Each structure stands twice: as structure tokens, then as C-alpha cells.
Length: 417
Image 1 (tube, helix red, strand yellow):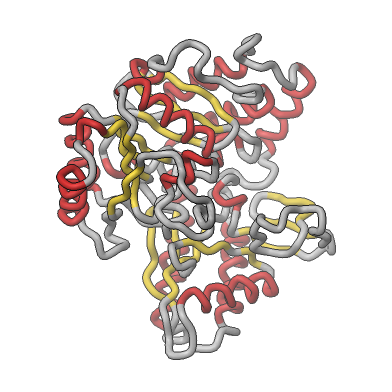
Image 2 (spheres, rainbow, N blue to C red; image 1 turned 90 degrees about the horizontal axis):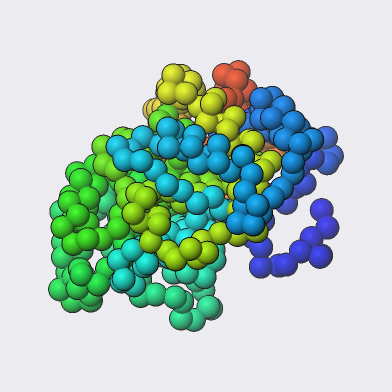
């Protein structure tokens, strides 16, 4: 694969070139077959080439490929906005802005929060990830590789620990960190928003503590702070529900969406309470490609397909097999580097632990190579890149999912203990 004309600053996990895909299976330019557990990093919850999406996209291309909504509106944008109001499980009417990417949704959410509150300070969480654009970058909860060598970034932004059953931080500790922040760093009445992932993606597939989520909601209400949930990776069915915040029984003021929203076409959104979304002066939100007509056609199919019944069935089946397989692997004693499973529903990670011969991150790096040779594509996460994230499409056929796990097991068998 010739990368000589591609910036060397792009990190490539798998040095192969994919030519075609079908649901959870892909083939490279040499004809080699792989089971895809990367899923475009959470983009392909409905798999490669979902037939209903392809049909809708083809029909839309024949009618209208694009109209810049700010200049001349088109029906696709209007239909997606209306569909989101029904699809997102909140108790208030939803207003939205469509964007090209999750990072762009993050940037616009910051604009909305600033305009609505008249404040600038943002609170984010350790190990969080919200995008690679400049303001979004400062929200990320680790330096390397995203913030390394970039100097001062837009702020002010403060970080606090992320409480989760998958970490050693509990709700009391996280609330104490917030209290300290308000006493030492910045007063609560200068905070525009708090942004958090209900399930961290890059951070290792860790579920936010539900007790903390409720206390955070109350704190934001008390101080007039906008609560933003970033569901760019965890949304659109990944956890078995339309959005992961349903597991927490707490509503956000603003919700960030993207990745699987349009089944592989670039579309994302920031949506929330109308009084917030309308706070930016007219013309302050928008973008040339935001809400492209073809991507909107795909998104409408995604929302129609992701019924609660379908999501429960797909995620329940996948979760059961992943949990049973992980339990069998650990009980066998063959893989001492295997730690606990993180996450919820079908959004699952496996922690790799240090052994006498290698660190957890070294074990996982070796597994990515071995897995590729065995015909399964894998992706790391976590601050130390020691958590294997499993993102096969929710629609993966059971026999294909089993084959992918068999290939993963064979790859694990090649690692030194």
C-alpha cells in the first residue's frame, strides 16, 4: 500500500487497503477476507452496505445530491430534524443542527452553550474524547497523541475524573473533584457547560456511573450549567438502546450524535432544548455540506430500522455471545493477559493486563497484528491503549460473529504469556 502522498501524521492501525464489504465482512485489494470488529470505529452499526440504505441513497442521488441548507433548504434536512425529535428519548421538543462530523457537532455545541449562558468555561472528563478540531481537542482527557506539541488550546477547560464501575473512581470522588474545582479553579457560575460521554469510547468503553449522572444533572440545574452528553460513538443503538443515556435515566440539555447516524455517510448533529439551540444569532450556525441530502436519506433509513425491538434483539444476542466467550477465555487460564470486560450492551471492551513478559498495551499491540493475520480486524482504546474495543455491526450474522471470535481466539493463542 503506497502512503507516500498521505500525511505521515495520520496514524494507520492496519496497513491494508479495503476494497469491498458486506455487513461484518470485508475484503482487501489482495482478495483476503476479514471479519470487521472495527466497524469504521463505530460508524457501521448497520454493517457495510445495508440494502435499505443503499436503495435510499441510490434513489436520492437520482433526485438531488446536494443543496446548501443555509442558502436553499431541502426536504431531507427537514425530515431528519423531525425524525430526530421522535427518535431521541427526551421529554422536551428537540431542535437540532446537522453537521458533517462529530467534532463539528462538538464545536457547535460549545458555541450554543456560550451564547445561551454568556459564560466560557467548560468542564470535561479524564480520558474523554470529543474530536480533533481545535476547540474540541482541548476537551479530550489525555495529551498524546491528540494535544502533543500544539501549545495553548481554546479554553478555559478543566478536567475531572470519570466515575465508572469500570474504573477505580466512584461518584463521591468525582463530585469531590468538582467541588474542589469550584473552590480552587473556577466558580460554578462561570461554567458554561459540562460535557461527558455516557460510555467513553476512546477512554476504554467505560459506562458513566448512574448515581453520578443524577447528581451531575442536579448540579447543572442548580448552577445554570448546560449538560452535554456526547453520544457520537455510543449512540444509534450501540448499547442496545437508541442512546446510552437511557441506561442512566438522566436527560441532557444538548446531545451530540454522529458516526452510525447515516450508516457510513458523513452526517452528525447537535440537538437539544430549543431555547439553547436558538441562542446563537441567526446565521451563526450552519455549513456548506452540513445536512447533505444523500446523507440525510441514509439517516432516515437508519432511524426507521433502529426500532427498540430490533436494537434489543441485535444487541442482546451480541452481548450474550461476547460475555460467554470472554468468560470461557478467562476460565481456561490460557490467556493470563486478559482482564475484565468493560462497557454495556454490545459496546464492549476487554482490558489487557500487564504480565511478567509484557505490558497490557504491548500484548494488545501484538494482538492487533496477530488478529489481522488471522483474519479479524481489531481496534485499541484506553489511555494506555490497553483496552480492546469490539465494534462489529449490530446486524452481524451469528455465524460470522462466532467466526470472528474464533479467529480472535486463535490470535490470542499466538501471544506469549
